[in-house]
Length: 189
Image (cartoon, rainbow, N blue to C red; front, side, top):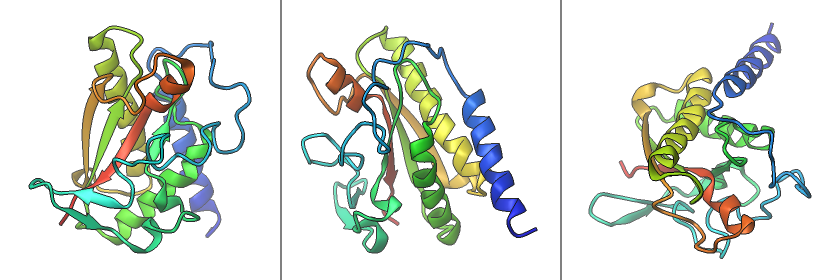
C-alpha cells in the first residue's frame, strides 16, 4: 500500500501532463541529440549564459533578494533547478522534468506558507496572443502537476509572458529552446 500511492500519483501526473497539451506538434526539432537532461546541458536553473532569473535567490516586490539556501543552493538537488523546458509548440511536461516538479511539490508541502509564481514563456515564433496563451498553458501544466502532488492552489500563482521576456535573444533553435520554459520563482515571505 505504501508503494501504491506514489505510483498512483506519478501515473496521475503523467496522465494530466499528457492531457494538458496545447497545439502539440509532431515536429520536434529539439529532440534530436537530447540526453537525460533534456538536451539543455547544465543550464536548467537559469539562462544559458550562466546568469539566472530564478537561481538561488528570490526577488521581493521592493527589489530586495533573499536566498532560499539549503537544497536550493546544491546543484545536485532537483530544487536547484527552477526552469522547466518544453518542446516546440507544446505544453506537455517532458519526463526529464517530472522529478524536478515532484521535488518542488514536496518542498511546498513541507512549507505551506511558501508561495511560488509559475512564469510561462514561449519562443518568438507565433503571434503575440498565441504565445501568451501557450505560456499560460505551460504554467498551468506545471501547476496541475504540483496540485496532483497535494500542493495547495493558494500557494501557486500563474503568469504568462509569452515571448516578451526571452532568456536568449538570438533567432535560432538554440535560443528558442531556452525560451520555451516555465520558471518557478519563489516569493519572499
